[in-house]
Length: 107
Length: 115
Image (cartoon, each protein chain N blue to C red):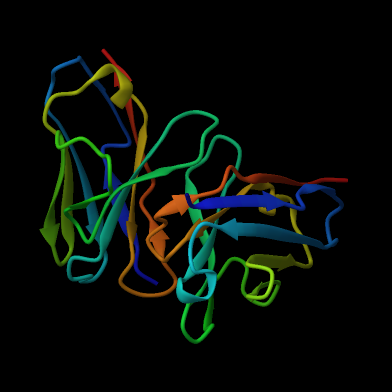
C-alpha cells in the first residue's frame, strides 16, 4: 500500500498569511492527489484533485502543485473560513490512502 | 444536485454485523465509482472500500479485508457496506462518497462497536 505522510500535523496562522501543507507519497503516484477540507462535525469537502484541478466553487486562493512523490497545498491568503483540518488522498492505486491531516488553527 | 444519504449505523456488540446503505441521487449511479471512508472519534480519515463504476470491481483496506463487503444495487441507486466480525476499532462515522476522488460526500452514519 502507498503511505501518505502529511506535514505539519498542525499549524497556527493569522488571517492573511500564506500557508503551505505538504504530502509525501511512499512511491510515485504521478499527479493523482486530491485535497480535502474538513470542519468539526461536517463531512470533508473536496478542494482539488489531480494535484491542481480545483473543485467547482473553490476560491482561487487555494492551489496545488507537485508530481511523483511530493505535493503541496497552498492557501495564498488565509481567510477566517479556512480554519479547518486538511487531508490529502492518493487516487493513483488501490487501496486509496489518506494523509494524517493538518489542523490549521488561529494564531 | 448530487445527494448521498447514509443509513444503517448504530450500536453493535463486538463480533456482530451491520449493513450500511448509501442512497444516491442527482447523477448516473452506475457510471461512477463509489467509496466508503470512515473517521474514528477525534481521528483522521481512513479509506475503507471502493467499487468501480463501469465493471463493479471492488477494493478494500487491509484493516477490513475479509470482514467487510461493498456492493451496489443499480436499480435502487444504493451503495452498501456489509460489515461482519465487527471490532471496537471499527467504531467510527462512515461516509460514502461519489467517485474515487470523493467529489461529493454524504453526512455520515455513526457505527459504535461496544459491549
